[in-house]
Image 1: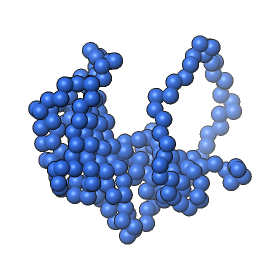
Image 2: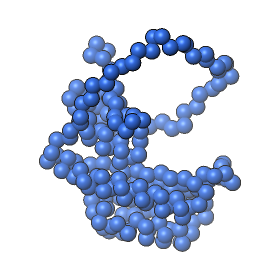
Image 3: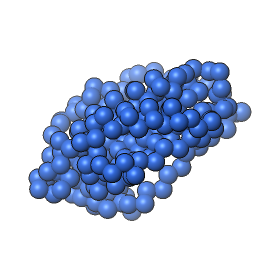
Length: 200
């Protein structure tokens, strides 16, 4: 791996050579996992608005691969510990990507197990009382416009979601050509949400 593809930057904190060196050493420990990476961005942040509370330090790592993006975010009170946690998660996700290489390269098709889930009736449950939200103003924390909505198989959408550390992922389904959302359920399996056929 060419070390020049790794960019380390600091936001809201004093850049230190020691932190930069530590982050690079941790990433280069498993250099073989980065063989296909075209760019690695490491951002070390101190969130000044939360200074003095538990999660005031944060690390974001984005690894750009030919067919996917692997993203890891960790926050906590100590930057060195955040780097350790983030790189451990990153290595697991990169290994997952490499283990699925035949799928990413199109040599094998993506497979998803279909599960028949019985829906429980909630008709007899009492209606929950709503709080008074008259003063509530919702805030959008982040807005993202998908720049690539090329059709994906369901299995590939699951892999992209897992590699980025999300619990849901919006994509165009290759089978149905519908905009769909895959999500991770509490039991560990996945759910798929699609609009009905008659929706225009």
